[in-house]
Length: 242
Ligand SMILES: [Fe+2]
Image 1: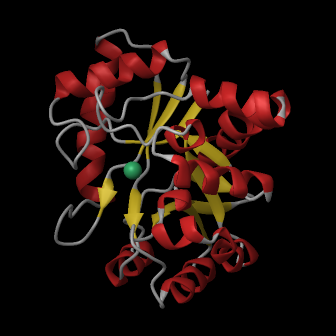
Image 2 (image 1 turned 135 degrees about the vertical axis):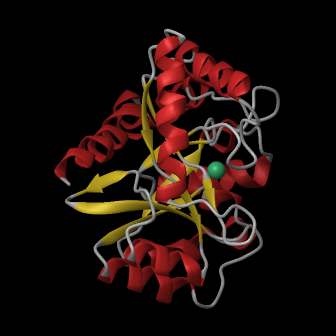
Image 3 (image 1 turned 120 degrees about the vertical axis):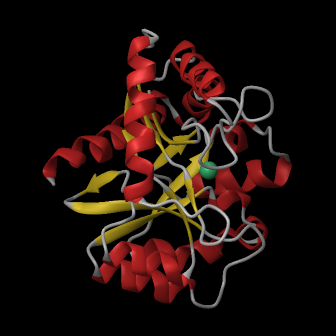
């Protein structure tokens, strides 16, 4: 399986605090059946001032450490970009690491605020689309407004956004409302990928196999494979295009 959303890169956000934890997360991911992970540190101005130029050295050092530790996990650098005006400036200067490409366009993992859908969100999506980027909405099933009414996602789908659901939501570990919203999004055929959003071993571990199993039981093996292997692979393979 391929994980498009996780926080193993040490010391850059609220994920792994140190190298030891980062390596433990990478090992746990492999144990769970994950072969490729795109590391997605938070990019949030004033809180986590990450950008490509600051993240790349940290990423290369971590990748070397994972290799030296003999952990068979292919790593790539992405980012989880919070919706904010600064994000659009970073996009223009190519400082936002993409997950990969989808039909030739850069895929940017975009996080809406937890509480709701800001008025300017659609405008931001349009600007990103004009810059040749496709937003992949990070776990919309955990957004309180979308959780109450998943139809609020429809304009984003119409605008070409992709959707990442979090494995724990699909399994029901984030509660019934998040699970219900995740499955409504799946039923609508709007989900592109399911990922771990792993931050630590204890509360938010790198666990995807359980969600894959739940998907296979409810929607069939083809859907489970599409969301945990095929679509993520298409996106990661697109990194070579440019
Ligand atoms: Fe995340």
